[in-house]
Image (cartoon, rainbow, N blue to C red):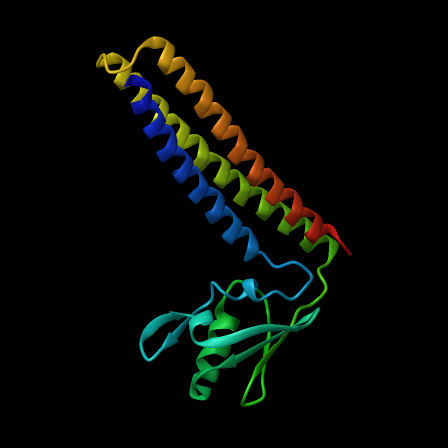
Length: 189
């Protein structure tokens, strides 16, 4: 009975850690590498009739070539707002509007810019690791409370802590893998 309480905590911790990994994956996908990827502009928000709307809900975004993104809005009258949102974003991209489609040429990254981007992705990965460690800390605290309340024994708590550390290590390794992949993409010339 007592270890079932710990297993429930571990299951919840696993879910929360998975969400942290997914969040890190999404954030890392939005960092621009030298190649065109629709994920680069997905977080751009457009003022569409007074409402902030994600770009991917307003237009079809495609990587037409290795260094070219095309954005085809579902409503052609939204082209100027989309163009303005891309210019105002922190992406450093210049859109080309031909009246039907917006084309974005993805420039080569300079060595200096690549190094800045690597620092940025390392920071994003560290935020993900911290999030996972915070989950571990919260669950460890809950396990200590269970033992203090007499709901679980010391052996069950120790086994739970060991299992929690294994979960933590697994999810941190996933983030490290995402970071390594993104770093190699950035440093690839």
